[in-house]
Length: 269
Ligand SMILES: NC(=O)C1=CN([C@@H]2O[C@H](COP(=O)(O)OP(=O)(O)OC[C@H]3O[C@@H](n4cnc5c(N)ncnc54)[C@H](O)[C@@H]3O)[C@@H](O)[C@H]2O)C=CC1
Ligand SMILES: O=C(O)[C@@H]1CCC=N1
Image (cartoon, rainbow, N blue to C red; front, side, top):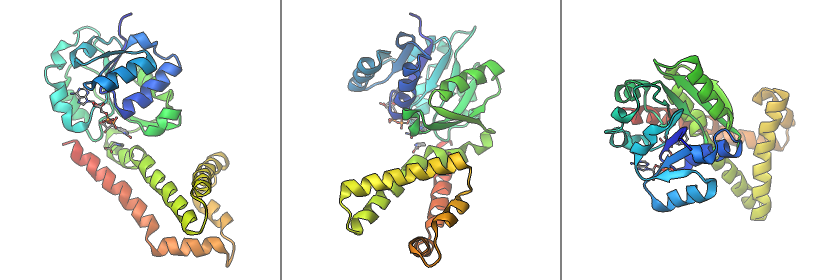
């Protein structure tokens, strides 16, 4: 079967997206070609998802619909070298780049003939609970946007933003899963400090974060309203909230997002 989706870089994020695309029959496995230099990783992807694999990035330029760039931003130039001229002149594939920080301007200088969409997904995509922001480049037509939307709708929600917001998106939802995971780990540690056995503390921490997110989503309550509902006068929660404020919890999170945004900006240079 001819290749419809090419992927360069078969790592964590590519697998998160790929797994859902295959599971939901958006692409049949034999219409997907993943280019990945690590033999073990290639073998794993081939066995697990039944996709085609290669160690030669050039082969992915035959993809008819979409080429997904999923390597680290630091090696973009090396990967793109000698690739651009291989694409067919008529109907080259849409390029989707998930590279943190890398601008459309830079991508359009490399792939000058092609429609390009800059994309920022996140790892909850693995379980279909991701959120992806997309920003369209100059040559993008409505059908290209529809194609990107259908791919990323398979892994969660999709929002379209101007490119100027992409570094901020990267700082929040791209990096955010790590910040939330640290919060869950810390909550469990707090439970252990309070004398709870580790497995119970871990279960309580995880479900508290999941349940709170679901509650906010379903009721549309503002987070401050939910906080007020939990906080009894002279009670336990306000004692904890006071300590969080003393420790600069809000500022720590705001600064984490801003630092990640700044790093995204730097990676794009
Ligand atoms: N991990 C995350 O949560 C997110 C990552 N991203 C972006 O996704 C991209 C990939 O990140 P991850 O999947 O986390 O990294 P990763 O390190 O898991 O995957 C990168 C893959 O590229 C392969 N690779 C290395 N050199 C190559 C080459 N010359 N040609 C082809 N493949 C090559 C590596 O062997 C590896 O399997 C990055 O640009 C990152 O900014 C975007 C959103 C979220
Ligand atoms: O840490 C990173 O650079 C990537 C981009 C967003 C999430 N992980």
